[in-house]
Image (cartoon, rainbow over all chains, first blue to last red; front, side, top):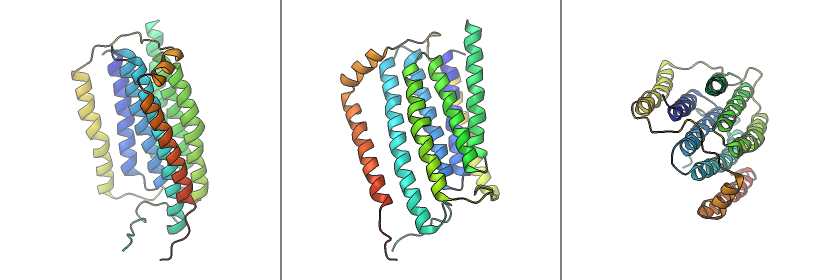
Length: 102
Length: 169
C-alpha cells in the first residue's frame, strides 16, 4: 500500500466516524462535533492528495485552508442557532425541535 | 528512517482513532469535545508528517484555538445536566441506521481507494510559505477574498440571530 492510500484510509475513517456520530447523537452540539470530524477528514484527504502526487501542492494546502475557514463560519452560525433553539425550547435535543410555524 | 515515519504515522492514527471514538460515543459533551481536540491534534501531526507545517499550524490555530473554544462556550450556554444529555437509550432502528451510516462510506470508499491506488511519492513535496502566499495573491485570489466575505457574513449573521427578540407565538 502506498502512502497516499494510507492517508486516504485515515480520512475515510474520519468520514465514517463523523457520519456515525451525526446519526447517533441526540443533541445539536454533539452533531456539530461530528461535523467537525467530517470536515477534518476532507482536509486531510485534500492535503495528502496535494503533497504526495504530481498535483499542485499549493492548491491542496489552500483548499484545506478554505475548508477550515468554512468550518469556522459554519460553527459560528450553528452555535448561534443552537443558542436560539435552547432559548425557545429549553433543550438542545434534536428530537424536541420538531415544531413548524404555520 | 522509513520505519520511523511509519511509527509516527501509527502513533497519529491511534491518536485520531481514540479521539474520534471518544468524540462520537462519550455521554458527556465536554468529554466529547476533549476527544475532538485529541483528533484535531492527531490530524495536525499528520500534516507535519506530510511536510505541510503551515497547515499543521493553521489546524491548531483555527480548530483548537477558535472552533473548540466556540463549542465549549456553547456547551456552557446550553446548560446540560450533571450526567450529560447523551445518556438516553436509543431504539434498535436508530442503532441500525447509525451503523449503516458508518459502514456504507467505509466499505465503498475504502474498497475503491485500495483497488485503484494512485501513483504517489513516498517523500512529500515541501511547499514554502512564500509559494503559498504567492498562490493566495495570484491564481487563488478570488477564493481568498470570498472566504473573508463568508466569514464576515457568518459573524454578522450569528450576531443578528443571537440578538433576535422573542417572537410572539
